[in-house]
Image (cartoon, rainbow, N blue to C red; front, side):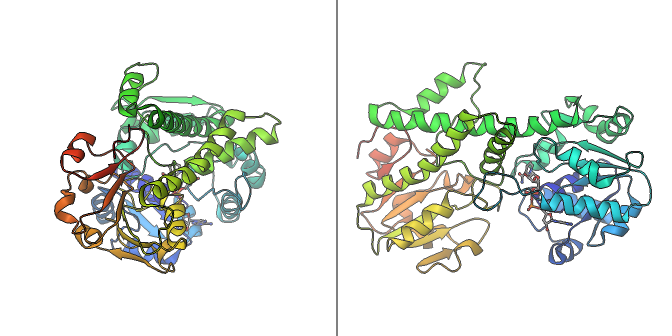
Length: 429
Ligand SMILES: NC(=O)c1ccc[n+]([C@@H]2O[C@H](COP(=O)([O-])OP(=O)(O)OC[C@H]3O[C@@H](n4cnc5c(N)ncnc54)[C@H](O)[C@@H]3O)[C@@H](O)[C@H]2O)c1
C-alpha cells in the first residue's frame, strides 16, 4: 500500500487481517515511526487492535522505503491523496504520478498496479504510459468506498467490490485477493478501467446530491411549518429513494464529497459535457454554509461581539478525527472574526486548524466548554452528545441551543424551557 492515510492504513491492516502480507509505505517518517510503535495515526474505531494483532503476526509492516516494499510485493495499491487543485475544480494528480514514477524506478519484476485512490477517468491510461512496459505492469482501478468511522466494517462487509481492468488475465489474481470477502457474500464485479474510475465519482456525486436535496427541502420546511423529519421518513420509505443520506444538516463536508463533486464537473468540462446538476449541488452546498451562519445571527443577534459560542464536535462526522472540509472550518473563523468567543469540545482532541485563532479555545470536557455559553452549536453527531441534560450542564440561564443534527426532540426541549433551534423544523421560539 503506497500512502498510509485513512484508506491505505485501513485497507492495509484489513488485507493483512484476511491473511495477506502487507507492506504499508508512507513518505511521512513521523507516520511510519508512530505505526511501528503501535500508535495508530488516525482515529478509526477498531483499527488499533487490528494493527496490533497483524503487526505481531508479521503480516503487516510499515516502512518509508518504497524500494524495499516493492521488492517484496506482487500487487501495489496506490492510496495517496487526490485533492482539488488550488482555486480550481480539477484534481491534483501529482502524488499519483510521482508514485507511478517510483514504481517504474524500483520494480524489478512483474506487478499489478492498482489505483485505490479516487482518480479521474483516464488516469489509469496515464499511469500505464508512465510505466511504459505493458508486459511487466498491469494497471487496474479498484476504487475504495469505505466510510470513515465505519471503515473496518465497510472493508469486511463491502456493499460491492469493483475491479476495473482492460486485461482479463489479472482478474483471477484480483478475485483471489478478495476471496475471503467474496466468500462471505460481498458483491464483486468487473468492468473496464475507465468504468471503475467513473463509478466512484458518480457514486459520491449522487450521495452529495441526495444530501443537498434534503437540505434544500429543509429550508422550505422552515418557512412552511413542516418538520423535515416527516419528509425524510415519508420519502425514505420508498425503496426507490431509500432513507440513507436523506437527513438534513449542515453543508456536506469531509475528505471526499467536496473534492469529488468538483472533480466530476472538471472531468465533464474536459470532455465538453456540462454536468449542470452536480455544478448546482456544489453551489447549493457553498450557499448552505452562508445560510447557516445567517441563521446563527438570527438566533443570537447581528452583534455577536463577546458572545460565547460553543461548538460540540468540529469534525465533519462522528467517529473520525478527519477535519477536511468540515463545515466548522468556515463557521468558526467567521464567528470568531465577528468578535464571538469560540469554545469547543471535540472527542478526538484539540485541532491544529484552530490553534492560531484568537478567542478560540478547546476544552476536554463538555461541561467546561458549555458552562457560560450564550449559544451551543451541536455540530457533529457523536453519541456522547445525544443524551445531554443541557439545563444541568449550562449555568447561564439564557443560553440557546442550535442543533444542526436534529438530535433532540423539539417538544421535550420546549418542555424543559430550552431555547432550541434545529434544522428544517417549525420555529417555536
Ligand atoms: N478518506 C476516505 O474516507 C476515502 C474513502 C474512499 C476513497 N478515498 C480516496 O483515497 C485516496 C486517499 O485518501 P486518504 O483520505 O487516505 O488520504 P490521506 O491524506 O489520509 O493519506 C494519503 C497518504 O499518502 C502519503 N503519500 C503521499 N505521497 C506519497 C508518496 N509519494 N509515497 C508514499 N506516501 C505518500 C501521505 O503522506 C499520506 O499519509 C484519495 O484519493 C481519496 O479520495 C478516501
